[in-house]
Structure formats: structure tokens, C-alpha cells
Length: 421
Image (cartoon, rainbow, N blue to C red):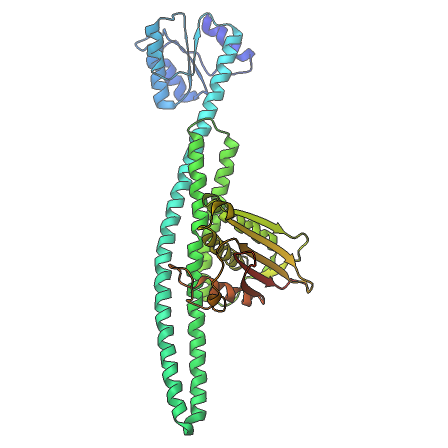
């Protein structure tokens, strides 16, 4: 009689009832077929199993939420019921309002638990992909470092051979014409080796910069795990997962682009907004700047003309300049750690990007050599970054210069022609 009344009440408040069963054995059989969203379980049942034992098996086999109903409120019964992790506990007789509240709360909690489990699984999958990307990056770095060393050795060998050949030709006046021809051939060989070496250096720099999206993936993943340990907003978790996916795609694209310069000499020019490039780099280095207590100020001019160029290569140039600025100001007092990035348009339709810092500046003896390959003012630098930057900018028909600011610190200025001057 009570079961029929409950069925009537449930249908009245908008729910459907899959079945009514008198024993635990019948309930398990019915649940196997119907797979309901919620089970109302009387602790006292016919048959060998009582409601608590039946609910425990339902929980373990089907993961379906259970609400207990009983006319007894003994502490021992309640404690035993708690061990099965019920979603609710109703004392008979049950009025419609209590029934409605218990059912709706349990269904909502069950849905929330399932969403949380799904999000946790997605996050773990993202972390596993991140670990795989880190391993791929490590192997790529090792391969590229080996390539740079080998290409450098070859270039040194060609240089020595050229110098020896030129000295020999100069000593013999009668062989001047032949010497000129041979010298030209050797210069062409050096130019070829320089291009190969420069491409390998560029690949090494790009591989190093992959640490930025990988660090962002790890930071977002850690933040999401912390949120999942307490109250959380599913939309915030989804936004974090979307950021992880975006960073993962960026890293994958950069890995693909690492090998492209070794296969061809052409760029991938497209119409670009300089301010968007600056904002992209600012997002990449923002966390590093905060950790180093460095303020980065953007002063971006409005209505700049578009430029035409390769997005990845130009991002590499800006990133290299900003990272150098960060390294320069880290040793300054905390209130003096400042970096400023400005964009302006020239009268001739060109676009300029200026990266300045409040660091110690560039030694005067180094200003004239700062863009030379293998020349560096850093104790652990390779002297490749600024040389690669100069090559990229000149490839884009632009120019780059370095100078010290009168108020202290260094300034790098890039000038690029507009797409439609």
C-alpha cells in the first residue's frame, strides 16, 4: 500500500517509476534491466537480504544513488546505513513535500558527482598529453643541440680552408684570376653553410620557447586540480581545459614549425596586426614577470597599419627581446624592475615596436657587436638569439637596432614596412 502511494506521489510531481519490488533479489533483477536514476529503498524487505545489504550491492554494481525509507530511527540502523553512502534518509510515513525535496536533491547531487568525475578524467587525460609533449620536446632539444654543434664544426672547417686558400692565392700573382674564381666558390660554400647553421640555431631557439605553453599547461592543470578538491564552477574548469587545449595546439604547431626551416627557405607570410603579436607575447611571459616581480607596461598605438610576415618567426623575435629584458632587470631593486613595450607608426607607413627595460643597459663596447653570431654579454648565453632576430627582421624587409636609454636601461627598436604603405 505504501509503495503504491509513493508511486502515485512520484508520478504526481513529474517522475516515472520503473518498478516496485518486495525483495532485494527482485530489486537487483529489476535494476539490471531498467537502470533507474534513483532508488527508494525500504530497510525492511522480504527475502534473505534487507534494504541496507541490497543498497550496498546496488551502489557497488551500478553506482545508482539510494534514498533509505524506514519507520525505525535506531542509531545502530542509521550507522549501518551510513556505511553504504546513501543520498538521503526518509522516515515513514513520508509526505509529498519531503519526498519531492529528497528526490530532487539526490538527483542533483548525483548529476554533480558524475560531472565532477568526468571533468577529473578529462583533466588527467590532459596531464598525460602534457607529459608526452614534454618528452617529445626533450628529445627534439637533444637532436637540435647536436645539429647546432655539428653545423658549427663544419662552418669552422670551411672558414679555415677559405683563409688558407686566399693566402695561398695572394702569394701567387700569376694565378690571380683562378684565385678569384676559387674564392667565389668558397664564399658560396660558406654562405650555404651559414644558412644551414642559422636554421639550426633558429630551431634551437624555437624549441626553447616551447617551455612557455608547456608551463602554462602545467599551471592550468594544477589550478584545476586544486579547484576540484573543493567547491568549483564547472564553467571555470571547462575554460581551464580549453586553455590547456589551446596551449597544447600552439606547442604542437611550434614543434611542426621547428623542422620546416630545414626543409625550405620560404616564409609563410600573412597579414598581421602588430598589437596582437605584442599581446600574445605579453600573455606568454606574464606569469614569469609576476614571479620575478617585474611590471610590464604596454603602450600600443591605435589604428596601426597591418604588416605582412610569418607570425611564428615574428613572435620569436618579440619573445627573445622580452626575455632578454626580463633577464636584465631581475638583478635590479624591486621597485625598479620595469619593462615597457610600445608600438607606433612612422610617417612612411612603417610600424615600429620598442622594447625597453630599466636594467643596467648594454656595455658600450658591446653595442656595435650585439647582433653578431656567437657574441653574448651573458655568462651562460650562446650568442645566437639576437643574431637570429636580426636575420628574421631583415628577411621581413625591416631593421632592428639596440641602444642605451639616457635614463638607464636598454632599448631595442624593430621597424617593419606596412603591408600596403
